[in-house]
Image (cartoon, rainbow, N blue to C red; front, top):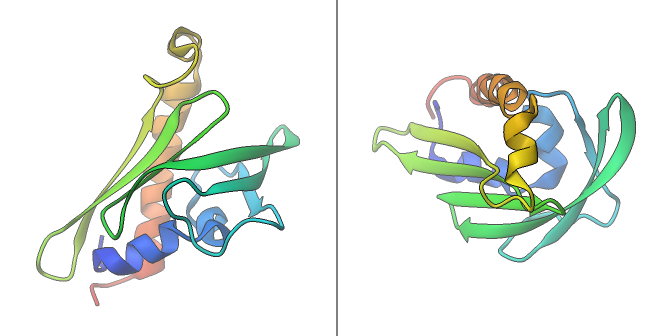
Length: 136
C-alpha cells in the first residue's frame, strides 16, 4: 500500500470508515453506539446488507497498534488485517478471513462464502489502495 502503517491502521480502527473499504458491498454503516476507535475487546455493531438488511455485532479479538487488528462475530470466524511497514513509506497489507475459529467451520467449508470472500477481499485491498493514492 502506498501509505505508512499508522495511516492505514487509523482507517481500519475506525468502524465509520469500514464501508469505504468493504469490497463486498455488504457493510453499510456502524451502529449509532459504535466507538470512534477500536481497541482489544471493543464490541461494535454494523448495519449490513446481503440481500436483506441485518445487523451484526463484532468484537475485536486481536490488536497490536499499527500492526494487527482482527474482529469476530457470533459465529466465531475472524476478519484480520496485518500491516507490515516496508521502510519506504509503504506498507504490506494482508487481509484474511479465518474460519478455523468458527463454531462450525465445516459449514463454511461447504459453502460458497470462502470463495466469495476471497474476491471481496481483493476488491477491499483495491479500494484501500485507491484511498491512499501515492506514497506519503
